[in-house]
Image 1: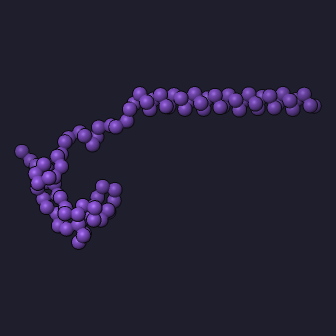
Image 2: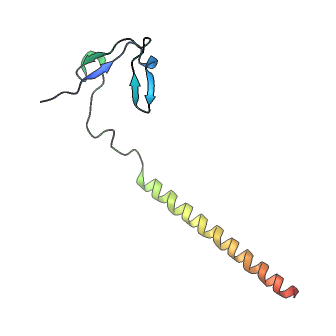
Length: 93
């Protein structure tokens, strides 16, 4: 029913980067050639691809659990050393 037009440039690396994924035409990039997706060497538009996650959740959850365990272990070590220091200070008195 509708098509999203795709712009291609003779020198896409010469486009002016305005903000993240926003670019502006420059003299070096040449004029925009507007066509349908997939025509004249332009890319295809595939819905849901950009939104698809590239994160492996199992790996990330494993890393979170490992970090949590390491933090807990470090906190226990500090707490134990503090208690030992308090005991040693109490013996001195």
